[in-house]
Image (cartoon, rainbow, N blue to C red; front, side, top):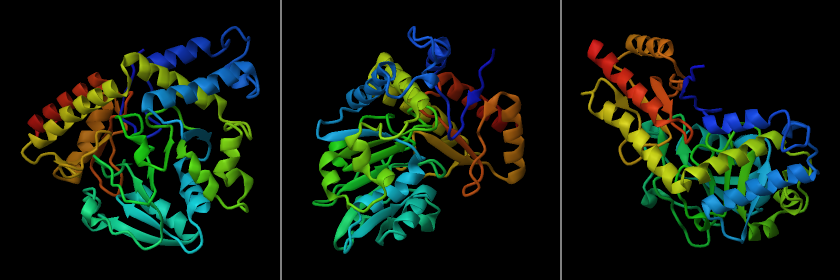
Length: 360
């Protein structure tokens, strides 16, 4: 069997070792005579999986004890609503930094809940960069500041994170969580759909500072209240058990290869391979993101014209590359090189890009 060079933006590549482990345990999980998918979420067998996933995430990201880890459903898209519903009080203003489509969608949902303010935006330049910290202008009575740490469509990423006294920082890290070490204590809340770096789709990880739970209004629908899930260890209703199991396998894989520091090293190496080809192409390839804002997760680039782009993508498909089409907002191409994408795939793409340029 030949594995595809998977550059899909999400759901994305999973480590081969993880898939093989899941395959070996699929029918009979640890002698239970059942698949993980068949286990009761109240069973001791599943409870061990659930607790291991939480413990590994805390260990790998160095999450302090005054934070809780929740496993929810609905993806980041549901978090766009849950965040303001839980933390945007009457008389306060939710502040958002716009750096792409997902932050726009988060803002759209917050507007349905209460007052909002755009603290900074790079929309006028078609989101080619991340704002400088001094460009962020908070409103009065800020409930929180929301950012999107990595922008899959435009290929930009926060290289560092802003900090404002007495204003909680909330981040959508769906597409770069676990890709590099981060200081959790800079954030009041982090949420991330799993389907980029953590595992398959179906589970959303939420890391929140426990004191936030005291701010939640009492009249929220039960399932949209973070306290419901914190109080029940994310077991209030049936959780996405197989997705959480796969998450635990991915976290074990990260630990085995050397942790988040090793993952960061690999990601930087993969990204530099592709950005070097782009920068050394004399304009044949052009990166959408400006230097200093470039993502180590999503490398976005364009070719001289639409005809060449179509030829490039057709040739790439024949060569076994998957998921290189750029989003319509940017056009061109996008290589999503999340944690599980191997170095060999990036080297193969580099070689294809060089040969295609030489041919034309």
